Length: 65
Figure 1 (cartoon, rainbow, N blue to C red):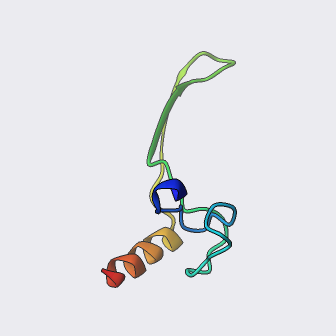
Figure 2: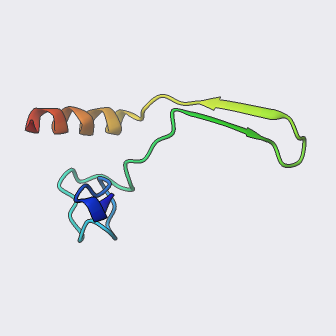
């Protein structure tokens, strides 16, 4: 993403150390994951809501537009 001018928020390596939102870690999130469990061979389906700090960062980004 940094290569095309849109680094991942919180990515300290590819954003030249910028962290204007003062968050820890990268703002990467998978809402849904599906995979076959490597031991049980059962299909796994996981879902997760956005963390609160993601929602807060999104609100800040939308205000910048």
